Amino acid sequence: MSRASRRREDEADRNWTGAYRPYDILREATIALGVVLALAVVLSLLFSSPDLKPSTVQSWSRGDPVDFVTTATTELDATSGTGGYGPPYNHAADGQHVAFVYPAKWLGVSHPINTAKDFVLAPLRSITGQPALSAAVSTYQAAPAATQAGWTTAYEKGLGNAKVAPDGSVKVTAGTYGPLPVMMRSLLSFAQSGGLDGALLADRQFYQTDYTRPLLFMADGGVLAKRAEQQHLLGTQWGMMNETGSYPGQSWLWLYTAWYQIKPFSTSANADVLVMGVMGVMSLAFILIPFLPGVRDLPRRIPIYKLIWRDHYRSTPDTPA
Amino acid sequence: MSFGNGEPSENSSSWTARARRRAVEALPPDKLLPDGQPAYMASWIYVFGVLTLASLIVIIASGSILTLKGPGWWHFTGVGHFFNSIHMWSVELFFFFMVIHLWGKYWMAAWRGGRARVWMTGAVAFVVAVPCALTGYVSQQNFDAQWISTQAKDGLNAAGVGAFFNVTNFGQMYSYHVFLLPLAVVGLVAAHILLVRKHGIVPPFALADHGQPNAREPEPGPEPVQEPGAVPAGSVS
Image 1 (cartoon, chains in turn yellow, cyan):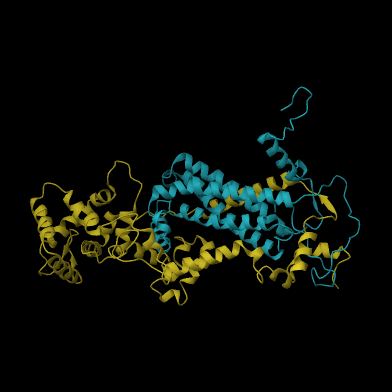
Image 2: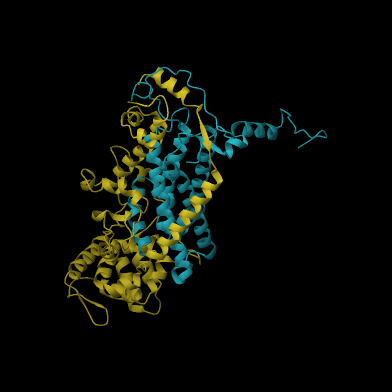
């Protein structure tokens, strides 16, 4: 379509000079409101809404103590997902990038998290009346980095064959673990009592609404992923657009989630930033459709409009043969 | 305001008078609340706009009740859970109706005739409604909130958004969900509806050459058949 034709069409379509019919806008809106309200009530009565109880550090440490201790050890030597994440949590990595564009790095560390200090050492330091524990933490902190790494690496290997005792504690075969057995026994006990849930939240003030630390700690372990797999919520199962149970979830995120299922996104280390970039461009294109040649012309080439306005075309002299 | 003779002020230096004059010129009462529509507006596709608007009203009403009672209420009471269900299903209906509405308007090329802003405000409302819903899902305080927030954080962090929009911070997400993003959605929807009222709904493609839309020069058409009492105006659809 030429620019002149488009301009003429634009002028012709500005005002309708043909026939009108009676119409009650307020009655239509009221009926629509009644219909939607009735639909929402019926759907609520029939299907309710999902509300699966959240996981806690306490339930995790009681249900899978080996996974909890293993995760805590990786937090201590910063080899966990959060420990090596990079911005906005720490400087361990640069974050994802596309070519020379590093959005996360440029925005910086806005929610600083030191996994060793915040998830393990500070909670252990908050436990009083246990001289052996205090000594163990001091020993660990005073040791050179290479020695600390030797202890944690050996302990993580040992945890691979660990057994859970009837009292919920973790039994690891003997090895060169330094003070780690004492520290981790105390941390597990603290977590199983519910104390660690509070310690991870407590910061500078009484009121707390930021669950970043306990959520990241749990996400580094297997507790959330295990439940998510049972509920078909993993990334390979179209991930977070789904919801627990058989509810529709955020089906409007289907396109966002779809990219993760195909190459190169499914195999890229920078999948998140790539998908966000693609969706950003597509969203902008969606908003700007009226100005995009090709996309804006499809409606006149694929005549769905003849179905929409079939009554009009039947009753006007312009009606096609 | 009248000045003794009962006539409103037309003082050209008054900001208020100028704003009123421009508002009334753009949207005279018979355009704002029409009792007539173009005769071609005769398809079920037109109801999805008003159904989307009705869903938004139910979302805000049910969400307001949940907000008044606090974020924990619905986990411990049957009535609270029922209102949460109403809220959730009205969100599902909102997106369902809005997507059909958008597709319908796309196939009508509803941006024709100077209506690009109508399309754009609707499209931006959809784009803003997505994080509005996401903040609701991560504010639920249940396992869904835990899983969705720990998954969504990676995309947002990678894009740099996580620096100021932390989905694992319940307090921040709740503020976004009950105030900032609904305010944006309602503002965009209001602008969208006012623009629809101003420009009217888009007319059908002209079909002068047997199925080739708009292939002709505009010609004076037949005399309009004006029904009694009808006014030229658009629709909320």
